[in-house]
Length: 364
Image (cartoon, rainbow, N blue to C red):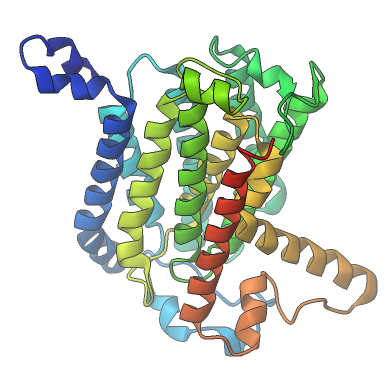
């Protein structure tokens, strides 16, 4: 809504700043950060007073000796505040006529609602499994399919969505194939679950999401800038730069949540937050047609997801384990790494993956 202040620039020159996507992106980040940082403490106390904590975190896969019993009293569903702050930031700073921005926001909220249902089952029924696996996967694919379809019919992105890009190539690998939307939907579902698996240590998923969101913010900004897009041989899409505002709002909410979620966490984001963040990252990747690169940008998330899948199916076939425990951050915990060591080292890896992914912009 604040975008319309730019219409009064003749009366007040500085108001023209609200027409600049970089200024609005910074405003969105600051808004989301301040909301979560300022209200995070009272929100955590409210969750604690309402006894909104998930069922016992022991699930039969993680050895009891790895569990920090103090965390069983830490409230969850902090993702409600994160998503709420992101939504408010987008309402204030996105250009109201930007269909791209609202598809991204709607997709994130939809995944958050699914996560909220999962959290509610864990909290109110004290059911550690929450939403059963098959219905949960069905709705993840359903939301992903709706978002991809919306991108296909959006005037700004309809042509771009029919092209399949891979890293290091200037031109699409192929176009107009039914494989393209199917792969996009699958990529979204995988990343949503990958972020969900990663959310097992204080600040781990939050910090890694900041690197991913910032990386895709760079991609969307360059693709929305005619000169930069031409220089880097990127497809130019008018209006796609509004996704920068969305991406920075996600960064801001994660930074604010990290204030309260760093070790020892005052609250957990729960599936409400992790599914929403996974949805945000993957939808940004689909928008810029970099689904394959997304698994490099989110390299830590990819590691976590791969460790769970490999462990599960290898154990089914051989009754043996590849890792001491999965997701892989628990493997390092079994190796006596302190929680802070795991989180910070995974953040470092996430930053390295992000820099490598940005390097592909020039190596094309």
